[in-house]
Length: 252
Image (cartoon, rainbow, N blue to C red; front, top):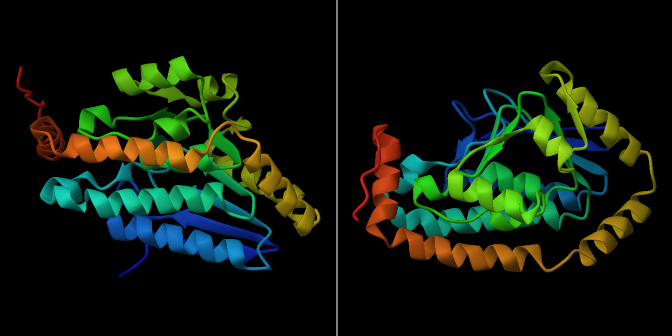
């Protein structure tokens, strides 16, 4: 199976690039591969910083809804892949920088919310269409990016916010034109890679330890509601409507 990404290493910076047309939406095996590779990179002594970015129309459209529409039971494997991938970013011993462009949806939000530093192109847009897809999840990581009420508005309405608003709210370190995105992220990565690996590792562990609450526990709580949602007829109708490109029809 071909992985939905490619990886390179240069001067201590490991670069993971999502490249899975058309929209960088990953199935259960794809998420598992992402998690495994991030864990591997985090254990390599020659890696000092990890940079995640993407090719194509957008950073990440989340999970492969078509896979779940065909077999809702795969939600367990998808949940595990998401959980492991987000944890592999958040708990990685190395700093993780994520550079986003275009759409940042669902699982893409989870990755960004787990990251240490976020850089965005001016075309980036953030959203959580979970409710419209008959699913739950992502709120814990979204709340690590944005204030509580903004999170709830995004979650309940499905409306997206742009890079300028994300910057205003403090989630994004820099907003740059699309053709400058990689270099802006590498500029930050180089500064970190030049420092003492031991000190940076201690700094990340310390900063993660003083966060408010446990991100992974919060996400596990959400995933329980995802499983509950997938048992409902409305959830299946939402996925079918998405695949069929039609409006969903819910029972009163």
